Amino acid sequence: MPRTKYKFHPEQLVFVKERRTLREKVWLVAKYIIAIFVIGFISYMVFPIFIDTPEVRKLKRENQELLVNYEIISKRIEHLSSVIADLEKRDEGIYRIIFEAKPIPSSVRNAGIGGANRYSELEKLSNSKLIVETTKKLDELSKKAYIQSRSFDEISELAKNKEKLLKSIPAIMPIRDKDLTRVASSFGMRIHPFYKVLKMHTGMDFTAPTGTKIFATGDGVVVKTRYAQRGYGNHIVIDHGFGYSTLYAHMSKFAVRVGQRVKRGTVIGYVGNTGTSVAPHLHYEVRKDDKPVNPIHYYFNDLTPEQYEKMVEIASQPTQSFD
Image (cartoon, rainbow, N blue to C red; front, side):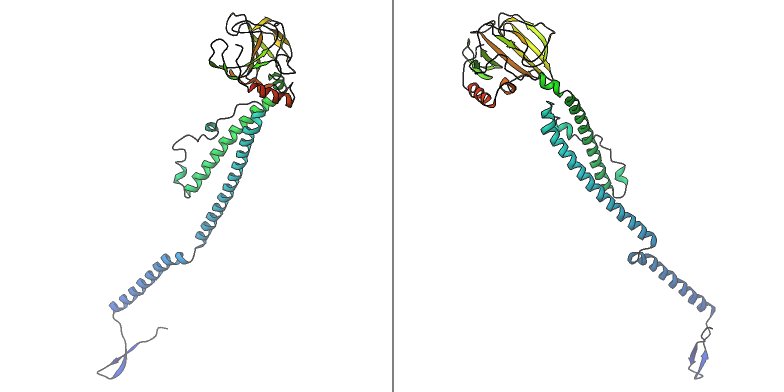
């Protein structure tokens, strides 16, 4: 029941009932409506700042879960990156060396993922920085894993041929020299016997009487037999596969023909003094990928450690080559 309001009448000196005009009543109602609207608006704007709505709480919870999941994924990516890095290290430092495989250039392993706008669509999303960085890491990881997988495929094939590789590597001396008295000149800069100037000597010289047997130092195929009056003189080239080949020069005669398959220890010819040579001897070269390498590193199948050390000592002495 509405409360009755009274006001004091100064002339009559009594309290009389207050009677509002229609305008006053309308204005009163309007003030109530405005007050309600203002209070509601303030509540609508301020309330969410201090107290979350159920929908906001749900979104915050989902966002937090998303961040936690990204953190877990990021840690897993870092772990996988370290695993792949370890595999790459083992691959380059152990497996590819054992199986005579060329190293994979770092420019290939660490090449970036192409495409300037590759991640432009992701940049439009919320938390775009986190999403883009995670996606980049995944792309880099995928590429590294793919390259490592291809590398292991290659190593696997080489492992299957390991026995053949070991038989093919030129691993013995080309003439019998157990007492190492026939090593005349080694690989490196040597004085040329004719021109008397320092010149790169791309093989090793072994002195021996004309007619001394010369042996193939590894399994392979004879790809060249040539008679010549200068340079290497009469010489043979054997292709051992796996990037290896050997050359035998200044021979007196051959015991094999082009296209013939030979085994390590097969007699392929005889020592001579043909071509540019000052005395009967064998000039022997080992080539890897068509580049001459020091043969002294390959006599591991017929020399003891003591004999090998003695040969290294002899080879280190400055001498004049025989060709």
